[in-house]
Image (tube, rainbow, N blue to C red; front, top):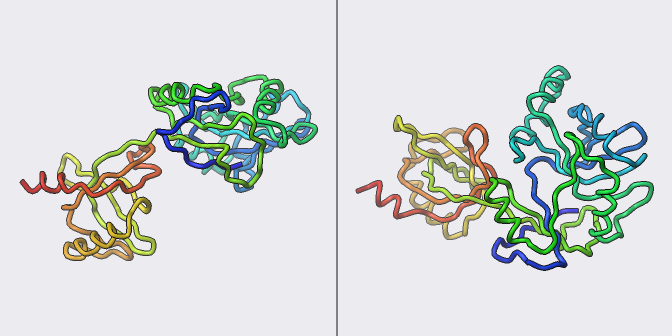
Length: 292
């Protein structure tokens, strides 16, 4: 079951809505049958071999068979770090995987149950959450996500204060619909905005390369921005940019670092790059400041 993006200004404080913390990792479906537990990504890829922690997960599920929807994460001081879990997902060497269970230990945070001995998808979310809590014995490898009923704005502020990704609001009477993007599930994310300098661009698809100036005067790319542009903004940019191209490298047109824009992003990676980025308008005031 997939989510729609919610409007952060329209979070509903209503007892008919349940709010979960939104963890930042990979969406994972856990399949348990007897002693065996397998993990699948939302695209159906079997990633069981990457996570030896699943042996412990199986012991935490008090049902012989179960299908559990969860987020695979690596936690640092109670906050999920996307880059750390993505690192786990890239590993294929067994020795490196075993070592990573110590340095980047994976935790699977359950938020729904599709089935135990029978399907629960037609039950309401409240019923499914009661079943989920009753079949899981929490451990370092498997937890049930905290939920609150009604107080969406409070938990949204709490997750912001903790530096977390955001929350998910769900109608308490919603049923589980596979491969369906439903307005019964809405995600609310904490985005940030920053000023960047435009370093270059690409066509097909139109992409701006934005960055920042370092203390030594050089420029460092931070992100490739593909989303958020209005047609007229692309047209205006192309007219100016074609006059200040400094170099063409394959499909990238590098330009003089004299144009600035604001971008919205979810977080910075461990290397300082921006993740989940969109264009939020040109910053002509910044350009004017730089020229004074």
